Length: 328
Ligand code: UDP
Image (cartoon, rainbow, N blue to C red):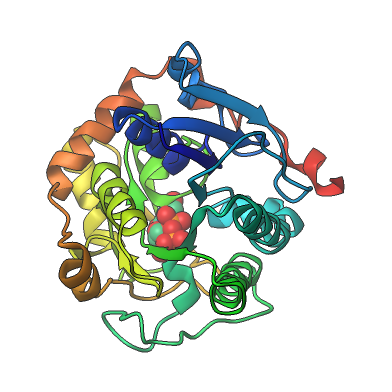
């Protein structure tokens, strides 16, 4: 049985990856410090013999008994609101956490895939974004802690690949959505759906002309799975190229939820990228991958998930006070 370590395993993407590798017959070692992750996302796996969970912060030395074939490093806050609240932890998990996991991969002779992001392109001046584009990032802006940590993560991963001959993979993840997103993490999809369910107006930031391209989680996981098992070490964009303005997206959510609330406009956060769309030719050519789930189908499933949550979840500020973690 192949053994895989998944960090950030109790988070949105991490938990879906645990499900996928369990389904493929792997022994899954899940790790999370539970700052932004939630054990409820993986509690259904605890009864399985080929699943175990470590409550651990990967910015500290990481030790796992036994052999490892693969490591997926998915631990990180991933929403602008989160990294404003815990900026130092965001930098540490991308930098120190990645260093620890690369060291572990070297000792175990494991292949490691790291979760990079479209944020490394910053507010892009090239559209759509190809992997060859170097990006346009403000190092000292509010998003800098995430963007620069992820850029460092790519650099140190390539250094381990070239210097130590480690088998590495880099996925650049574009906006992904689906069940198990955190309702109050501030990202646009839980924000709009939460507002519709609470009977509040939908808050579009800026004039809503900024664009995003949303990928359903099952498609994202399939792309990551194929990349891990491929022999391609350079970064690959995995995302859905179907682009939409945030204003039009808000109107779609109004229709989907049947809410009678209005769309209202709030100031645009600093350094909010104006446009984002992945060029996925590499993923298509190298991995034979392309997204299959349409936005209407994916959003229906996502809405059903949020509707199924206990009502009090809708009114919780967040499941934790992040400020406590700034001292770690
Ligand atoms: N956004 C919005 N209203 C909200 C939350 C987000 O208009 O309540 C906008 C945000 O300014 C950005 C886009 O939606 O332009 C996507 O934001 P998100 O935080 O989901 O992810 P990002 O792609 O910016 O990291």
